[in-house]
Length: 248
Ligand code: ATP
Image 1 (spheres, rainbow, N blue to C red):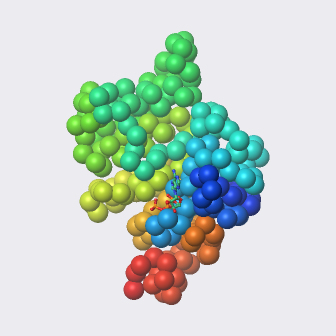
Image 2 (cartoon, rainbow, N blue to C red):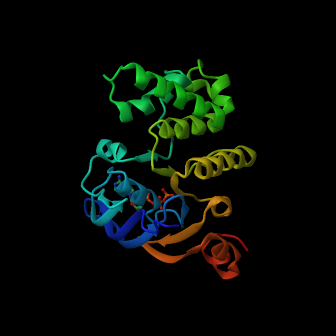
């Protein structure tokens, strides 16, 4: 890629009060790449995503397209193009699918912006999301709480895409989903990445799955990166598979 340091993480430390979780992370993600962050429970994968989106305070530096992200609120990070789909999805059960999607656009446009060009743009974005997720179109007037787990995850990702993010952060998208549903979801993420050139950082317990769509991967252990490389290399490294990915 022409922009290898589109996302550049340097000496990132972060934690919760006395609990120091991230102990100095260094990695870059090129524009348009899918980056997987793998590793055992408690390694700090979720904390890494939170530091990128302003949900936890970090030390060091995180730049997106040259702009510093550390020290920003989640809303400021969102306005700078960072969309975070948290573990557990965070969609609103009592609102319809379409209302949830429209909330995603509010972060971009502001709730009081009701001009016609903006309305048309949001309508076009909705269509685009429905093209990626036909199941959401079928269920657009249904309450989000009535969707299956897989559909709720699609909705959470769709809502994030309404922000037109340049960086999409996905935390454990496969959590609690059946294998077939997970595969479908990852194929859609791959399509979004290829068609929109959205840069993606995905945290996953299911390493095999994440490595299928990732260009590069990092293995995190106890708050440090212990291994980084092209996804294919990490997939093919037998010892890596056994030790870090729980595969033999
Ligand atoms: P998991 O897959 O289990 O979520 P992870 O790699 O995503 O693992 P993190 O969620 O980033 O790990 O957690 C890293 C460490 O930080 C863990 O020891 C966890 O207990 C701790 N931690 C996470 N959230 C908080 C919090 N809000 N307050 C205090 N400690 C926390």
